[in-house]
Image (cartoon, rainbow, N blue to C red; front, side):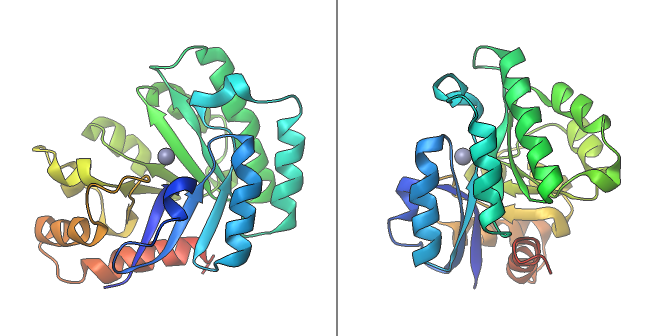
Length: 228
Ligand SMILES: [Zn+2]
């Protein structure tokens, strides 16, 4: 089996890859991660870099980060924007929205993939998405997706949205994974090491009752990351 970890972080990526994992998206959470991720991407071609400010860390962001982010992304057309988003359990929602929109617009202008973090703020994200034409929107990889069918259905109207799932999605008694179309699923560790991604892929195969699931998930991710 070949797997690409669609969402992980820097401390994890410096460790060995899990069995069967042949590639990984390494997401920054703050500006101090950026240079380290660039170094890792240069050294290890299996690593795909995503750069941005995570909603948990906007208070430590420095002035003009958006200018430096744009410059960094221009260096390499494969670099993505992430992890960015909104989190209702963190303070300063208005400021979070400002940060998100700024970074989202950079992704749109430079035609980059967005690694999205959203906790309890789907109404706001959906409202923001509505401000754009479908054709303008970048590819969005929603990470750790674990939401109800109503939100899923609204997100599925956007053809460029993918869902990267980890342990929670397959352990959940409601099996949300059942409702996500196979051609939109990716898998992720989110830098956690208390489960194996190949177990998650096997579990998804069982839920979907389809032995081609490992190939489909690998191809979904590879196609998006390699712009095929
Ligand atoms: Zn993350």
